[in-house]
Length: 91
Length: 266
Image (cartoon, rainbow over all chains, first blue to last red; front, side, top):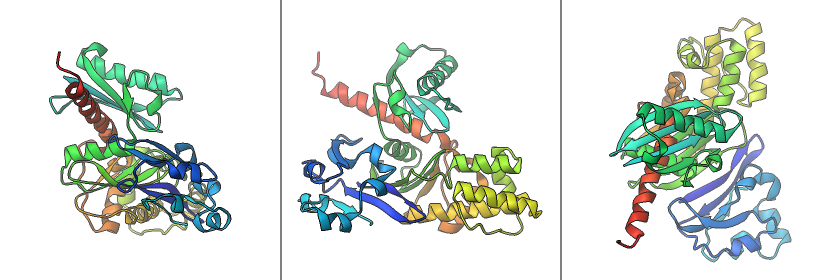
């Protein structure tokens, strides 16, 4: 499942995308993200996967600075922490 | 065996009870300020129609915005998975779903097993939602049920510059002051919302068959506009608003059966 968390508003598209077919539920992204955007929980089909916290999804552009700005400041980002390459950003 | 699904949406509260893979009863009401009371109201209405009490219901699951506030539900699922399952039950050939709810819109891809393969939701902005249409209906002095039909009577599509609920409202008011017919204002707004939905759908794969669920799927004017933008005829369920509750009841049956199979034989 390709899960898109976020929204598009007048200023752009803000989606964090988790490919749950690739995700193995290891949780490396949970600790890598400086803003703690992710959590690991079973999805509706019983597979343990990474997902964007419900409290974050509706304000994701305020919590997450976007992939490029974040990677300039942080050594390990969600993208690099994920060995499966399951996480991507639209901004 | 009977299974119950409760869908507490942001505007509407829906319930479905299934028996032998048929819908035994369904109910649609307003979501009140207290989700717990609302869910009990939905449950009691359905039980009264069936002439039963809760002991006859084998397993209950909740979905929707207020799914965690349904005290008598054993489990809950996200509305995305529930809509996918409900739509798959009606139309096994459905691959793309647009759920137009009271407070958000979702585009969903579903596979031949009724499982979600891709989804996108826009849950921040009220533009193009049921709440937005309610607001416009009240500005124009029309009933919510009538605005779809009224928009179809338009002879000239009046383009709107925005689907932002706040700006569109003031634009509609200023158009009314200029004497623009209500039907043209509504046609323009429906068009703007359809474009927004199309943009959301473009982020998933638009594949046949295509269905629209949620309360707005009952608005013929909206369905016509989306059909025009997509160039694809949607298949519509008899009552698209109960799709989430139906999906939850199907999940209830599936989870219960899985538990029975997992339990050691006594």
